Image (tube, rainbow, N blue to C red; front, side):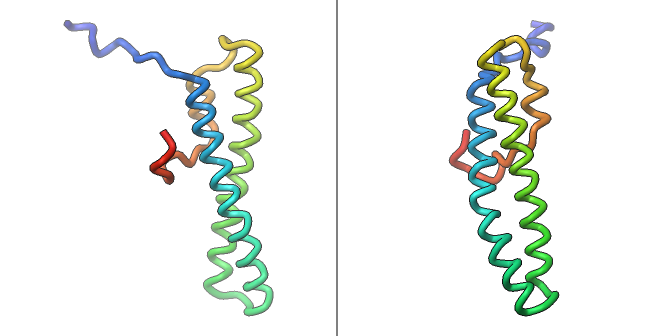
Length: 104
């Protein structure tokens, strides 16, 4: 019973990549229009609270796009050679799974 803490549960890499990719796509679809709307609002109304929202939306959108690109590359290499992708590679990619309760 002393070695039970050292056992790792097997991880479904395909499911992990797919759920992270889904969270990045949802975030990109939500932040893209928000960034455009706040950009127009900032241009017409001047610098204010809309500018802060615009900057945050653009930063989150850029991380979502970065996550999509990285996770698509990982998914492609996972399909070609399953041993080439580690779980830590998937965890290193940006993910927004914590924001959405319906993504497992």
